Picture 1 (tube, rainbow, N blue to C red):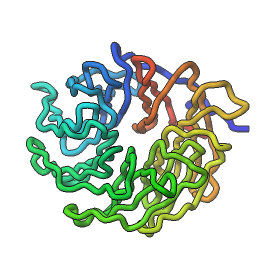
Picture 2 (picture 1 turned 180 degrees about the vertical axis):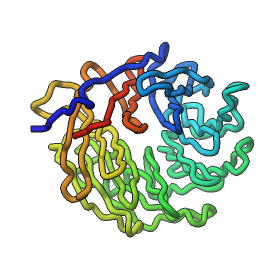
Picture 3 (picture 1 turned 135 degrees about the vertical axis):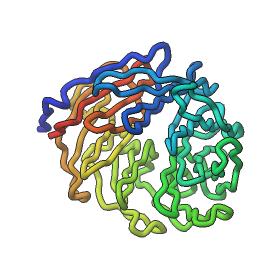
Picture 4 (picture 1 turned 90 degrees about the horizontal axis):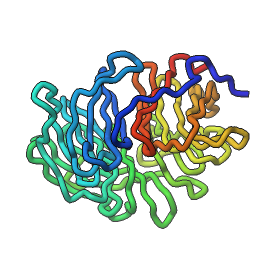
Length: 318
């Protein structure tokens, strides 16, 4: 039976009225929040104490924030209005430097170097040159065999993009060493018709959250990713996953014998072939999150059903 340790024994909420939240990211002592539609769009909080937040400023993106990528004092916020590039000057106020508006079917943007890689369900993988943040421009797009792209992560010269194709749900391995001509070199097909809900990379491993569980995939050969571990989740939907320091944090549907609420589970993955559960915590209520982030000893969750953030201490997961 899983032991629930004292430091993983409660969910604390922080009020962010009047809007529900969709995405979170952390840099230093600043928590960045993308809202679920609504007028504010994006907001930054200072983490003054582990469970106390103070607003530093916000910006109305015009379409909420589905994903947030941070680099060099800028925030790249993907929402229903496209990609907004924001200057995080908290003395004069957050301001928009650039914008790409033809990405209204995009769900995620990740910035690496001077390029923003966008997962777009209609266009596939879109590469945006952001070397001049005030004048971003599309470099190229790769779409021949990528349909309904929703997630993208970057490792070295490869972009790994979720896709639904003739072979089912896949992770496409796209060689981005030449941004003028991205090329698909291979990929990984998820068994059992498992659709990807979220991804994370830690070292050379890719962590997949799917609607039939979660798994660990080796990227040592990016052209032919190979599975190396499965989490014992009995086929339940996993909404999001994060990996750090030999630990995996999984936000998932409840187990069959647990109360009917989504839950956070923590696994030791020092042996990727046999993840070992350390602790779990049920959230209770009608709580929905599609991602979360880690900050020191905290896991921070947005809440798409209420105007609050959820903060969980993970100081002692087991």
